[in-house]
Amino acid sequence: MVTRSMLRRGVVVLVAGLVVQLALGALYAWSTLAAALQQQYHVEPSKASSVVGVAILTFTVVMIFGGQGVARFGPRVMTVISAALFASGYLLSSLANGHYVVLLLGAGVLVGAGIGCGYTAPITACLAWFPQRKGLITGLAVAGFGGGALLLSQWAEWLLNRGWDVHHVLRMIAAINGTGVLLGGLFLVTPKQAKDEVAEGMRPERISTKHFFRRREFWASVVGMFSATFGGLLVIGNLKSIGLSYGIPAGIAATAVGFFAIGNSAGRLLWGGVYDKWGRWTLVLALVIQGIFLMAMGHAQEAVLFTPIAVACGFLFGAAFVLYAADLATQFGNRAFPIVYPWVFLAYGVAGLTGPYIGGKIYELSGSYVYACYVAAAVSVVGAIGYVILRQDMVHTLLARAEQVETD
Image 1: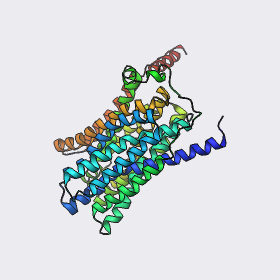
Image 2: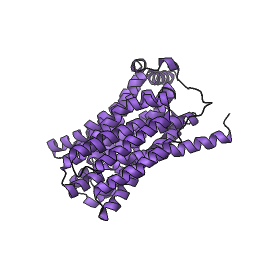
Image 3: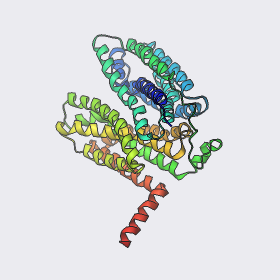
Image 4: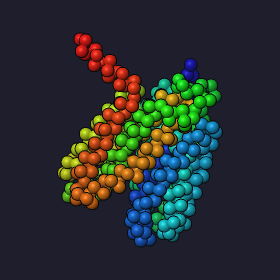
């Protein structure tokens, strides 16, 4: 029975988790800082932008160990470690004086490691307090990661426009966001009376990588996560360039990047509720709809269409980080979630390395981003088909319904 006291404590944990994710979401605002490094310290564009790529790669790899740490030591301990690494990374980069290697080690490796240690902690803690609303709670827990980028990009731009050195801005991020991760993390506790919820076949002593590597539903989630994030990353990695190639004014094309972030945050908030109502078929639905809008992005060659479709692409991209987390918690249980999810999340890291690059390469070869959008749409739709095929329970449901229709 849920008491008022338990509910209040659960809400506190939920708010704390949102604060942690808002602070960690600084990662996705790097493009604003990269532009300043180019202007103020003449850092080469490829080097400045590569820092966030290294951070994402480090983030996804370290998250495997971070998730295991959350399962073993609890969310509070791992969030404190996350805060230390995250703040140290931005502090080191603030001392770089434009030197690429220092920026790479600080804002790339250390910041990525910090996010990897702390990303699953808020989700795990919040799911423990609200196990019956996995979709909604996961959406609320991760919404801050998308919103944090929007807030920081606006705040950093405001400071830079007033003559701040980019290194001073990095130092402010280390202080303010690092403190946010630390303070929020101190409230991330799990209820003592909560049961170690685990799915059938995943008893606590059997929670191991080799166990879930054998399960088709695990690989279905890997395929789905890659397909769901590939297109979104291809678009966001080239969004302004896509708009400019269509002849859309630079100001509108740049604004569309911010609106993509708004859609990303909204998707993280709203798709969880849909999952709670419709279950894992929501994952297939989101992939199919995403394919439609990615195809539409290839034809959004007017300013009146470009921004709304960018918002829609962001909305569907954000869905991936809610739906697969919620579904994995349902499949494998809350106890196994921080161990299983990071391995699925690696698919996002692979999409991060391939999506933006393939989009740019297709443009180089064809002179158009239209074909890149078509490829992204195809990946999304094929991913939906692959997900259903790998999920035997969904295949059986479809066959049963087909037989029923024939009988009728």
